[in-house]
Image 1 (cartoon, helix red, strand yellow):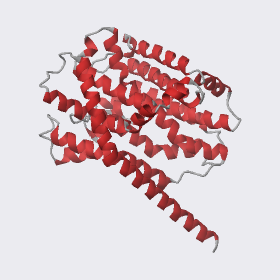
Image 2: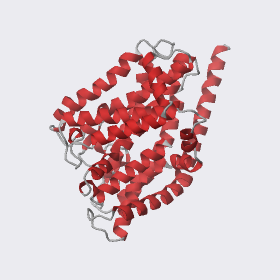
Image 3: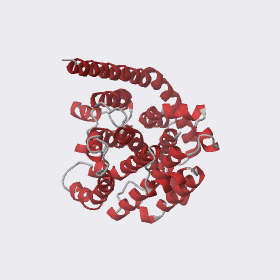
Image 4: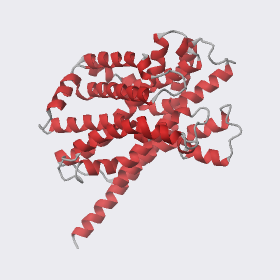
Length: 383
């Protein structure tokens, strides 16, 4: 369910921007702008899900994640549908006609934010995917350091979990503003500024595993108790979202706010993601929340959420062109409904034709790699 919520939140905020709703309805417009919190939800959830096997190895002595298997699964999960989305956007979305081969290669390899201040039309949301992929690359090293190489010692985990948000704060307040003045790139959209969101997921995963082992920390037990009350978590998250709708979290336009405002927004989004993911991790499996979250339709939308994320701006651009719509002229409910319906249809097709086969191929490749590694280890041990 959480993936579905995050994807639809991102879709909604983009439609609200294109229809001018940010500035039309006071607080409601600002809240619509702040639904980009869906990205934070994705990052916290990724930190939780991807780090948990590493914590389980260290605490519960589970099998170690194999790096080649990890990389293979991540590649086939991310790149096939991304390449399709990027190819369609670059070929058909208005505004991308004059991009040459270097720009095309840059977009296909997710390097836009590292060498440019803008992304192609229909792909402006992909800055967050570049951050996600960068996190995939550094996660094994982070977890090796945090878990002492998987030997059961967690002494270094707390410095890592505290250090990551500290790096984000330093990056947001000083490093990114300094780098932004140097050349045409987008340092505010690089991984260091969002490490706090991933760190929240890493910490939740550690506490979840420690609780399973009967070693939960005091703070972990309190957060687990809060997670057992999903209604309270969502109310608190909603309150924080309203807080970000005030001027302390910066402007809602594309103009950058001050570094202090950016930090306030980052911290609030970290807390929102932590609360919502905690509710998913610790809510009672027999409770109403768990039953609703496990509803078949929500689980399926969660399955296609990545395609929704990748394709919704392409669908929106096509719809606006088809109905000859002038941006910022209102009619949000109709444009939102059309975009959501069209995106769900297109995403369903992409899921079955591209994403699902790619994931299955990635799993088969990962199994083959694991089998070959196990065979080699057995052969080496019998010599």
